Amino acid sequence: MRSKLAVCLGFVAMGACGSDPTVVYVIPADAGESSTSSSSSSSSSSSSGQVDVPDAEVPEGPFNGFVRRTLRDGKGQTVAIIGITTGPTPHVLYYASKDGTNFALEAVPVTGGAPVVLQAKIGGDDFAYVSGGAVAWYIGTDNLGIADAINIWTPLTGTKTVTTLTHENFFFANQDGSRVAFSVDATVDATSIAVTTSAAPVATAPALSGANTMNWAANLGECFGSLGFVKDIFIGGYCTGVVPTASQPRIVTVDAAGSAVVRVDDAVPANNIFPEWRADDTGTKLLVTTPAFEGRLLVTDGPTTTTDTIGIFQSSVVTGDGLVVFVGEDGFLKKATFTSPPVVTPLVLAAKSELIAVFKNRVIFASARSNNGSDLKEVDDDVVTPTPVTLVATANASFRGVTGDRAHVLFFSPQSGVTATLKAIPIGGGEPIVLDSASRGTVAARVGTGILSITSVTTPPGKPARRFTFKYSDATKGGPLADAARFTTSGDFGFFSGKTFIFTDDDAGLIAVDLP
Image (cartoon, rainbow, N blue to C red):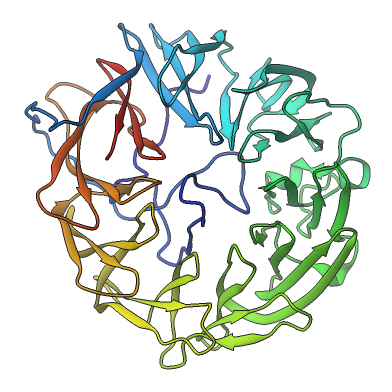
């Protein structure tokens, strides 16, 4: 049986879970919650390197006015966070267990209140997942990952159970949780996909079935599907049929009324693309990529699909307002419209570039890289003839994200061993602000200017758990760090919902700390 407590530790650390330096961060325009245009049912964040954990005790201390709110008292139980729903009333989903074997599945509002017991004892091979504003968990999951039924829960509509053979961890929801998609009529080789409401989910007459049935055998091999909601539009890139070696996918969309349209037909050899896609905030402008790394633009207007190309590229993103920002085959940073034909405009001509991040109308890029990091530059993709702004001139910076208000870039520079100097610099340039001279990792609140820096990661003698100390700083001011949260955990260690940082403490249960 897989362990419900085996969770990834480190999305905020300098080093957990791994990443590639060529990863492009696509930062949502909505500062309140994170989102993605192309995803599986679970989410992750990227870091690089490894955290060295010394064996030393951290002294306890006051928390300078940061109030710990207990969302769920531990009372001798182990609590493990699964995720946090989005939408108007975010809830934390978690497992609770007294013996590490029998698990209750519960949810509690981020703002506090009585926990909701979703299931008093969840099956040993049944697991729960969060996607957007909804939760799913399974009944009767076998050793192939096929369950007899799926439970779907939102704070607004409660629990709905759909009896159908369904692949576990194949669940998607939009941001408010009103629309969901899940596997139905599943076999080891294939699955239909229901796209329906969370208020009344059904497995009958699934939106994607027949010729649009998903090839599950290929999904476990060379054609891993890319599926998810953009607003109320469900988009899927996946192979069809049952042949495990299938590699040419089709792209389909399902609108809010449940109508499915094939956008790229995998029955046509010339349509060969990768399964992945990138979309604007409306879900009607998509970028797909051929095996030759040619970018193809899809404009999906009802039943009509317009197709054009931006040529071969090295890296790319689609902005929320419907531009493609990309590094072309020649190494130069450019933008392209979704018009037919697309209008391609250079963003940077002075030097070849590496695309790092895109948010709002800001593009963060590098023109020089060394073993110690890269420089950091910024350009406005809304300007006709933009002038790049240098944020960090020397190639010793490591981009770590942006503040919740999208007004400051966060970066490490310089880095020394397991610590680094954490800095913030305003969008548009200016003097960098030192936030922590010896940070082990950082995470920004989803709203506002607050950040948390990991100042200590230790292992108490003789204990398997690790102790983390997070300290608060305002990215617009810097100055002395303020204690914000210190806790010991052997499981997951922290998630943000808005300005609220939520974590588990082995001795105290599920805790929330509200930042200024």
